[in-house]
Image 1: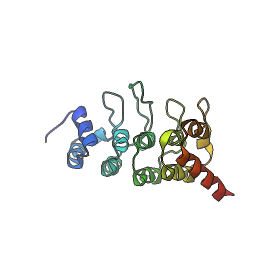
Image 2: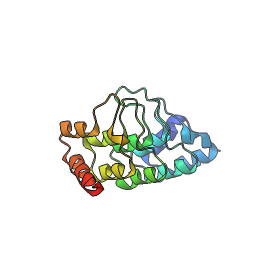
Image 3: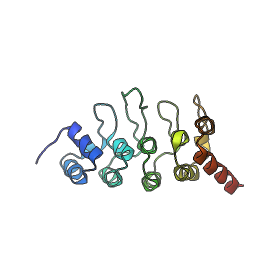
Image 4: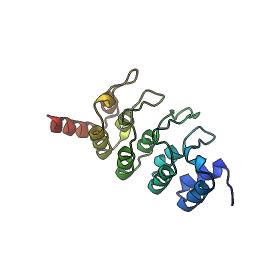
Length: 172
């Protein structure tokens, strides 16, 4: 049995080395919910880097899909894998998989943002449409932060605005 450090485990996740990640998890299943030295979760890092197969692997080994990181990086809020995936421009397939597996579309990060808020910054129409379809309307609200619409207008995110408009028309 070869053991690797938590840092090496996270490096394997970032690199997309599924074999190394799987071997490591077989030796220590607790690593599926590990945080790195920056306070980021294994699942969040895998989602951020769009490592779909590793996301599936981590979930199969028991990773908590709605676990919130304890980020100590000034520009990264404490967030979930869904937030991290959207921020990292993960594929529609990965985001949809997370949602299908029970990722909370209304979860706030430490900045008061839902995943839809993150998509409002520069997310694609596909991701916005998915989040709206899985949401219940709460994702459009936030206690202290701007609304996703306000962010999209400020950032001139036409994809977000078009997807939102299409969604509203469908709901009528």
